[in-house]
Length: 435
Ligand code: HAX
Figure 1 (cartoon, protein in one colour):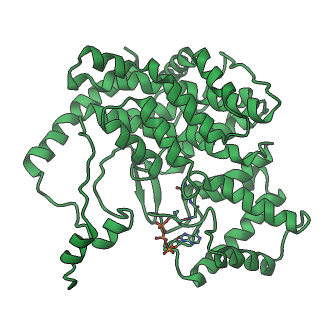
Figure 2 (tube, rainbow, N blue to C red):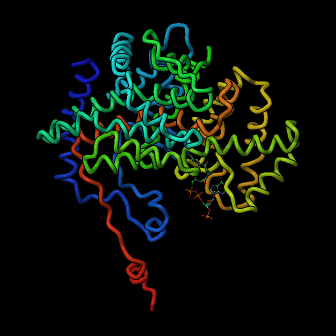
Figure 3 (cartoon, rainbow, N blue to C red):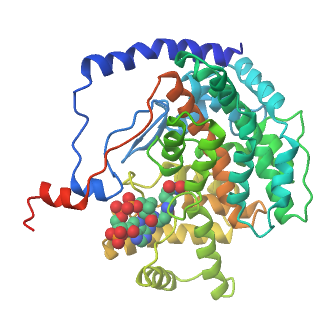
């Protein structure tokens, strides 16, 4: 058994009594009440999910296993000579809550390399898809097509104790995680680069190999590491994480569950917002003949978007009430590596102007930018101008957290998810409305 898996097993064993005790002795303690507004309004703020992988504070932003983004970047082992840590180290950290040593990190690097090979039929599936299909559709199809590989589904069919569910789930998750960058890069090169896929390099770690397969030189390897880690987890109520958890709760395997989660990430209010930000800014710059706008022009364009009933992509959040630290982290990268890049300047101008416009508009509870407002600029700068690909990048990163979560779901024996519905009549009765 690998070091990571051994530690994970001991952590799951140690954690189980805590969950059992809470359920048995304190099961009736309330975590909150549900209002009619929450029942109709997308369960916003209803505290009914449990995860220890990350926690999102509305003011502070995300903490991965208790660490902020800068703390996480500082603590994890780095690829020699690079600015950002191994993605594989973050996987170890999310899974176990422990910062791995360099030796433990390299063990995961090697383990993932051994799991990287994508079954040949996945390429047939991708190649049979019309080339104008959205890359997120291709990505989800590729993931779903590998369902026949599931260790969990096989062992479940053979008969397995509930206590052991986490083990084949973990194996499935490692197998999938190792393959996602390969699939993503293949889609990119097939769809946008004249069908010129670049094979994986067995010498490289996940970030390095991804940059290599994309055909982009340094420091894009570090950009990939930063990007995947930043997008890894945002507790478990966001659409992609929650969908994956929900589907997996029926004991569906990770291929069914994560492909479903990717359907959620592909929505413009969630992960697709990163492509929408670039579509919006590029469209706007095109209208100005490539020139930077004045603040007045920008303000007008934002109002035009709002007045036409559309949202300003990259702004607002269901939980956050401050500038997203994932935005800040990427902004700091830009300030260091591309401070004078016109698109970055425009994104900064939007950051100056949009919150005021949104406040005046008076609807959004959070007028500040989220992760998606900044991520596309960096990709564009390094040559990925095909912005409908951006959500696929998000999908690779998001797997780090979501796959960890579902492994733990199995470890702690979380049951099938099944919230209760009410009818509108019942809500009106509860509200005391006379009919
Ligand atoms: N532009 C215009 N209106 C906005 C807005 C924005 N950026 N953000 C919120 N609003 C509006 C909502 O549409 C809602 O309007 P209605 O009352 O007419 O329905 C109102 O303000 C209240 O919404 P809220 O409570 O502040 O926000 P929600 O929790 O309902 O929604 C969203 C959160 C992220 C979906 C929302 O802020 C939004 O649509 N933002 C733009 C899209 C975006 O950037 N999504 C990415 C979010 C981060 C993420 O998940 N990344 O993957």
